[in-house]
Length: 200
Length: 200
DNA sequence: ACAATGAATATTCAATAAAATATTCATTGT
DNA sequence: ACAATGAATATTTTATTGAATATTCATTGT
Image (cartoon, rainbow over all chains, first blue to last red; front, side, top):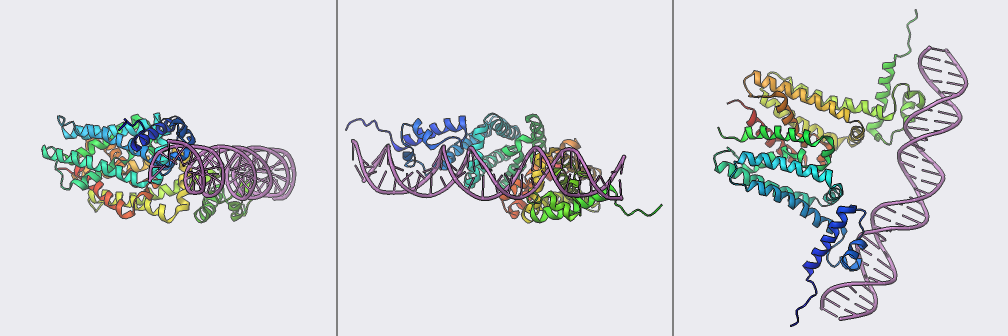
């Protein structure tokens, strides 16, 4: 059998996503046309629909990746097992804030896209929320195992933490204050939460 | 000197605000015209400008009143000195949430107005924020005085609390979950915060 | 002088049509 | 049969313009 060059479906999907990322990041979701993305992939616009249900579906995939990237960043912190849980919680919150803020400030086009997508696809936000919840539970569990934290209900506490740091995870709120101001508030919130978590 | 009937400037301002409230609440800020408000006050539209800089200025005054009403509600709770500080903090958070949610759900027109105004007049939001901060400081002080709470930095802690309950005070987030879901989260957040505040 | 107004002007809104774009589908090539 | 396309259709933006509304101002009445 001859070594077939033709790409597999998944490879093509990937190629489309890359082309779309490029365009969306540079010109924004709305200003990018299916025809342009198709041209970048040397195919017709119609053919895109063999790989994605529609434009929103392409955006949804990218938004997922974006949110997943954020979670991976946080996960990396959670997994720094040589550090104490309190410090890791602190860093998770500050890192989340920094990521949200810089995404909003430095990459407004990509941010616009994620917003547009999330408005139509609550399920994606919800999945992200679940992912973050699991990360928090993991961190809390570890903190308890090490005797650092005292936690009655892991899920409940993780929910409380996630809710309490909402202000640092909503791009819409970023224009309200400077990153410096947000950082101070994040420090204050972390301090308060740790007071409630520490074993004594 | 004859007993002058003609109203004072402040009375007329008040009359205008009342007429505007009525209209805004029933038909919304955008759908209400200056001419209509003027007619309700038996005066010409032009004359409104002797009392308010412009339409937004009228809205700003009402938005202020709206936010002040919320603060008064919370203040009433804070001042229930016969109850312990922890319970009052709990009620303040839950009451704030309930107010935000019901305002959003039951009075969308008034809410639309407050949003429109606040977008243009950040100073109003900022003043509200300062007012709430003072309420929290007052409550914390009282909690400390009673030996219920242990607080190192009152301002810092008040900021932390205010930030942690952001999710319950932003009308824009209300469509995300049901009031029931929000209530559970509020309970969780309060529990976590109180853990960090209580003296032991 | 002051309070108020009607008429003039500036701004915003809403309805429409034109153009651009998303999406579908019958057909083509392999 | 499958991958891909161009052309047809549906939907969404954009531009335009007339109408509605906000705002100003010269004038009127007190």
